[in-house]
Image (tube, rainbow, N blue to C red; front, side, top):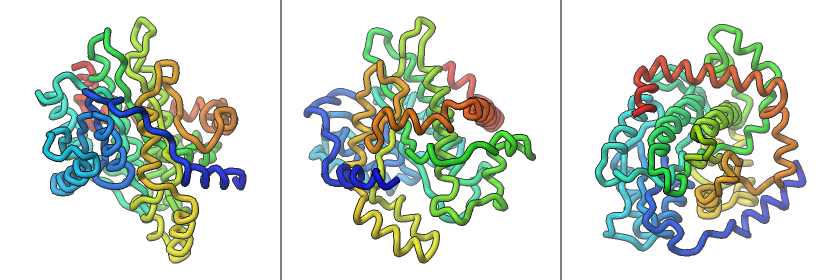
Length: 351
C-alpha cells in the first residue's frame, strides 16, 4: 500500500506523545518479554511515569540485566520498583507457574493495574514447541491467550469502586493480511486449523514471516472473546481490554527476518533503516493503550490507518460471514487445547 509510505515516515520522526509525568504513579504494570526491544522500551516508559514494573524473561540472568538497564534509563536505580519474573511462553506449565507466583506474591497483593502481553516471536524457519505446536502459533496465539485468560480472571476480582485495570495484547496490523476463505475447509482436515498451521509440510517457507500474520489473526479472534468476558453481569467493563500494533519498529525480533534468505539480508536492513521507528517510539503505543477509556474497550490501537480505513479493511477477516464462522472454529480449538493441556484452567479462572 503505497499510501502508507508517508505515514510510516511520519511515525518514524513524529512520535506518539507520552502522558504527563506521574501518570502511572502508584500503579503496578506487567510487561512480558521485556528484556529487549519494545518490551524493554515500554518498561522504561512505565517506570519513568511512576509505575512499579514487573518484567518477564525466559532466564533470570537476562531479566536481571534488563532490570539494571531499565532502572538506569528511568532514573530509578535502587528504588526497588522493578521486579523480574521467569516466564517461558513455549510451555503452558511456565505460564501457569508464573501466574500462580504473581498472584501469591505479597508484593503485588493489591493486583495489577495494567498487563501488557508483549512477548512474541517471528520464526524464519520451522520449529516445534515442547507442547507440540509450531512455535509461532504456540507463543503468539496459544500461550498468549492462556495468560490473558488467567490474568483477566484475577484482574476482574479487584474492588468494584476502583478504575478498571487494563489488559493489553500486542498484536499486529498483519492480522488483516491472511486469506481466510479456505480456513473453514482446513479446519475439517485432520485435526483442525491449529494442526494445519503446525504441520511442517504446510510451513509457508516462501513468506519472510511464516505464520506470523496467521498467529496474530487467531490472537485477535481470542482477544475478541476475552473482551466479552471482561464485561460484568451488570454490563460494566470490569477490565479494559485492547489490542495494539506498535507499527514498523527496528528491533531484534524484526531483524530475525534476515535469517530467512539472502534477499532478506539485503532488503530488511534497508527497509527498517528508512521506515522503521525506534523501540522507544513504538512502545509509546503500549502506553496509549494502557490509558484507554471504558468507551475504548475492545479498540485496536494503531496509527497507520484511520479508524474508517481500518474498519473497512477489517471486514473480510473480522466481520464477514466467513470471518464469523472461522472465528468460532478458532476459539473452539484454542479453548479445547488449553483445557486439555491445562486441566486446572477453569479452576484457575475462578480462583
